[in-house]
Length: 182
Image 1 (tube, rainbow, N blue to C red):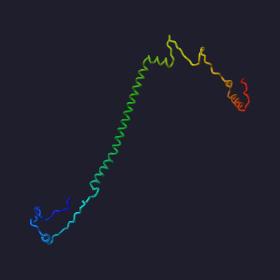
Image 2: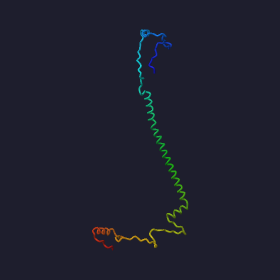
Image 3: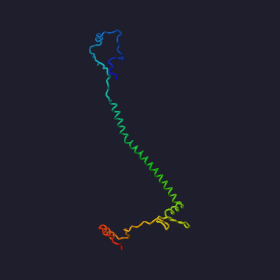
Image 4: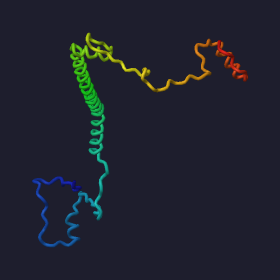
């Protein structure tokens, strides 16, 4: 903004005209000095431009308004993001449940089939239909098995009551020979 003030008391708003002839400095000062009129002196202009304050009132108000707007929108924005995340989790859960329901429905359809029921009965319960032969292969060994049976140790006693086993272990700890089983 300009620091010059408009002059008062002039009608018509016309500017003061300067004479076309050069006027001496002293004569001009005498011509301008009239009784009752104030003269103001303007300070000399400096070579460096004058800076305003770093933060003006408008800038502070704008910053406060932006901060208030951010704080006002933070809560609803956080709720929106949380809601979207929950919707994504629920959609994934729905897909998993739909897949599980399809698997259970196919299992139910399969179990209602009579052929599947007879197959499971044969495998799990070793059911044999009339006219079928059942062959069971065991690991115990048969009459043609050439593998030797495991040798039983002489120290091993069968069906010994607990009190006799206790007395035998005490005697063995003392160094006494074991008593004959009888």
